Structure formats: structure tokens, C-alpha cells
Image 1 (cartoon, rainbow, N blue to C red):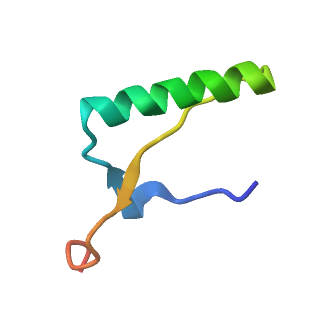
Image 2: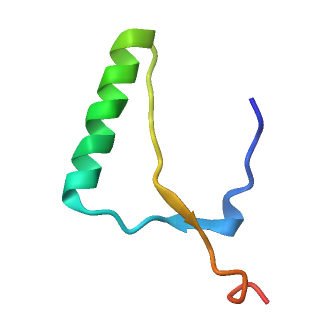
Image 3: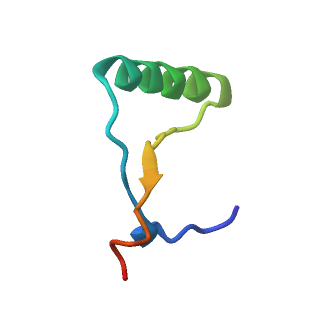
Length: 51
């Protein structure tokens, strides 16, 4: 698995509905794989901010 550098990303602004959908997906994948799963919603930072 490729390691990511998260300094170029920020937490995505998601709705309550999207948060619920993500949580349900985490549970579904976790049950099917018998592993702990955490999904993260993120978006790329505007590259102008880092200049």
C-alpha cells in the first residue's frame, strides 16, 4: 500500500447525510473484511495557499 503525505490535503466539508453514508460504508466493509476500517473524506488544499 502506498503511503500518502497528508500535508497537501484538508478535511472535506461534508454534510450530515454524507457522514452517515461514510459511516455505513465503513461498517459494511468492516463486516465483510473482518477488519477495522476508517474512511477519511479529504480534499486537496488550494495550491495557492501553500505558496
